[in-house]
Length: 135
Image (cartoon, rainbow, N blue to C red):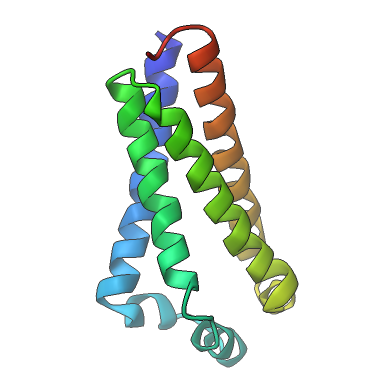
């Protein structure tokens, strides 16, 4: 029973991430409206690959959750791809871009939470394969 509860929790989490990504693709002003001038400058200075990488992260994370729903082993591969993409984005945000110094505590916490949730997604997928819950 807890397998399904965890699967639904991860699916909802990834659908929220996917909705933010779709909103950013369709109307970036929704995302940028609340940013300070420093944050807006960092947002506008992101490299060309940042948004596609983010799209890969949220889409593969969501597909991993769909794999859990259908108990398919491909969920592990998608979870791993999502984790690598999230690590790339997080590394860029914290180390390269310098946005870590200009964002508030809530945004820092959300950045860490996204990374932790994706790591938990990978661990859950590995455990599900090892225990034969997904095939």
